[in-house]
Figure: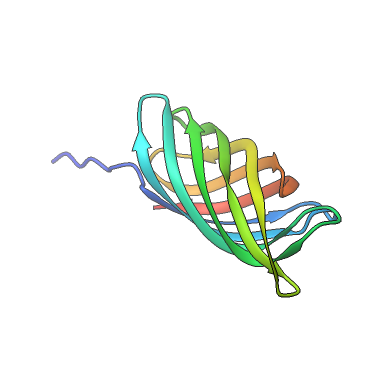
Length: 130
């Protein structure tokens, strides 16, 4: 009999910056909220540590939207959101804006991404879609 596997709707991803200038580490959860022939849109929440050059840095939470292009394994990834944290008990909010490449099979499994953005000049992430 025929089995059809639906595309994954949820992903977990841990990512770290590859730069000493920016400090950034996140644990994220993404959920697919829209899919068309050419794009997929995810809502993303996470927690971690982030900061900017000579600016605020500390632990906090993030909320963002992630847009992926393409339907095969290779995707352009665009992220837009905010990171809200505390630095020495002083609250701060930082913009989240990233552009990069994501390898993710349509049926799920390992995710690999490389991106650049405001909270990290260069970052690498690994995750799993299910």
